[in-house]
Amino acid sequence: MTLASPRPSESSGDVVPSAWSGGAAPDLSAYVLVKAEFSVQKLAKEYPPKYEKGKRRQRVLEYCCPKGADSHNDGNITLVRLSGLPIPQKIHGRRLHYHDSDAYIDAPKHFKSPDSSTAYREMAKSANAGGGALNLFVFQNGYLYDYVLPRVMDESAPTDVSCVEWYVNFADKFLFGNYANESLMATDEMINLCHPILPSLREAMLDLANSAGSSSGPKNIKNICMERLFVFEPHPWAVDLNLLFSSVGMGKRSALINEDTVLPVQSDNLQPMCSDMANRPTPILVVGAERKCNVDTGLGKRFTEAPLDEIIQKTTYWTRGEGHMTNFICMEAIDREKGSHRGPYTLPHLRYYLRTALTAFTAAVTASRPPASNEDAASLANMEDIRVIVHTGNWGCGEYGNNPAVIAFMQVAAARMAHIDVLVYHTFGEEDHRAVKMGVAMLNELWNEVWKHDTHQISPMELLDRAIKEWKGKKEWEWKMKGEKAAANGRG
Image 1 (cartoon, helix red, strand yellow):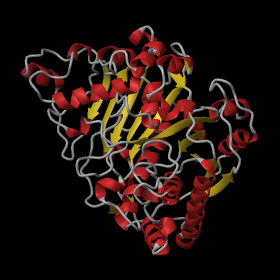
Image 2: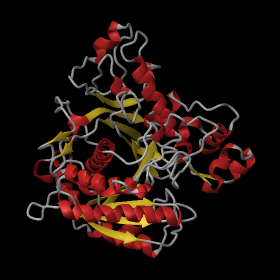
Image 3: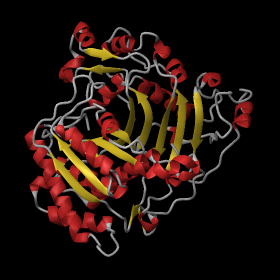
Image 4: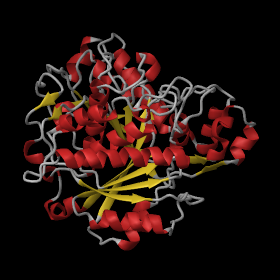
């Protein structure tokens, strides 16, 4: 990850003329609120998940991690929280290659076994070819963490081509905030159950945020399990940790904290939140979460009522190093009920979605392709051969009441602007699939109207303005009514 350097002052407003100079993404270091890198085993030891003893989640954790912290890998996990990028007046957007599958695409029975389906082969071929286009695949298979693409590419791609795979987590405002709630089992809760280091990550960030500048300091500061920490303020200032800890009677900083660590005495930036208290987007990337188990998705919401024996029987776990490493893009949708959102979408709604998804997707691209200055010179020639793949679905279309056609429009638009290589869009059922296709078709139509062929640029705000006008008075583009839910990949 290379998203950290001292934060300059921000431009006012959320639309700027030249943030994306020459079509390239802006320097994201200007928008990093916090970057924290932890030792996985130390993190798991110091901040175990706070499950109720004897309950289902605690039993699954014991089953997946029988040796406690020693069951986890010995690597690091990184969290990066960003403030929303301003929407550029002009941006270079990618062409769209749309690969539609009306058939239900089965995932492998076990995610370590390669899948040889034509769809995944086509996906790998498209990613391998590159060509400066967004390859969009729409599958009727729900939201699957199958990790197929990297293995298929390993078989067919040149050695100098690799891919980095990301999964969108349709997060609540408070990241992983319901991981211990025994009455809930949506995608967010399932993610936490299968990646038990994520609850530990939340607990550590909460401890850091709540104790910054306090007399006691973070829990067990000598074992804070932190490798690196960068925190930036709108008006940056930092204190030497030796001085900070000495001032509260804690002596020298822990040897586990690197010399480049900086920490303001008080900062809301440390909070694990996907939007700030003013409801402005602050999406979060999580890099390197090991998946320790697979819980049969057939349980679904029955997990909260199913007998423990059945849950254990339908859970497959992997020993240390066997599980796949997952990268998450955590971003919050607008909740219909919290804002009394009804009827047609407004321009502020679309601006929020574009800022959120564009920030998150651009950060994923930046994290996947480190800048030349941070890489060995011999590997720089192949840097552009790294393909960025993002898996997503009906973001905010469940309890939050968003329209799946509108959400598809916004996510695909952001992916084209962020220069994602492959976007895998997972849907549920034919009705949901049709809505997503409708959103993509509308995007293509309006995109072509505002595309500047001479400069190969697009005006994002002009695109959003045209969408608002086009959707006016059309029920199929409005918020869902209360009690009316689209098929959703989780609570959002």
